[in-house]
Amino acid sequence: RQMCIRDRRRVHGESQESGKYPPFVRRVNFEDLVVISPSKLRNINEAVAAHISTQLLKWNESLEGGFLGFRKLEVIGDRGQIYDDVPDVVVPVRCQAYVFSPKPGDELLGRVTDFYSSHLSLLVCDYYNVVVFPEDVNRALIEILPNDQGWRDKGAKRKLEIGDEVIFRVKDINYSSDGMVTINGAFDKIPCGLPSTVLSESLAKSYLAVSTLIAKSLERVGKVLL
Image 1 (spheres, rainbow, N blue to C red):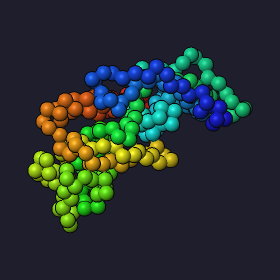
Image 2: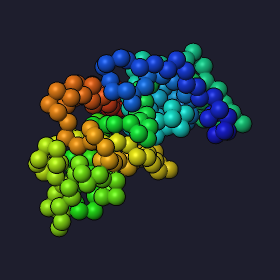
Image 3: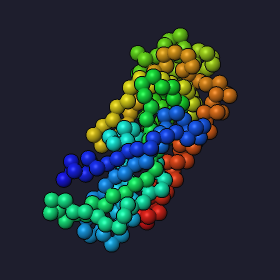
């Protein structure tokens, strides 16, 4: 039954909204199947919203990235299906899905959340965790001070502070069985480190748009589930 459901997921019509979001955000038309127990059939919208809420911000194999947010969520048709004599009803849905899909080598903007001599922690779009280890740092760009005293950007000639936005390169991306995403980052070449004011200002708008998209998607789901 699960194999049948997975095979019927569809992703098509991939596009990017030029300038509004960073390049690592894709928009696709996504069709999925939601399994609804008989006890939930009185409120299909609530059952669909509950399904979407378990998927948001996690890695999705069909989307090949993190499910950032959605628009235009709707049930397809007015009938569901039952498979293999199981009482659950399978309902097809579709939406415009926004996908977090950076690739190794991409340069992203992250916010510093913590630092130690052993690693630096960042957040991308206020959600996705990034870890930078000393072996992935070009010491001509960044100096790692001993005894957890901090990391110093040699170009900007100052220590990185919690809340600073820095440019890093994606080394690789890992995701767990429950869909949680962790990025291994690197400061290994220019422009890694603190960005210029102009660059930071232009990037901030597109990253803010992603954070707003996430918040609105969570709000849409929350309103249905209340």
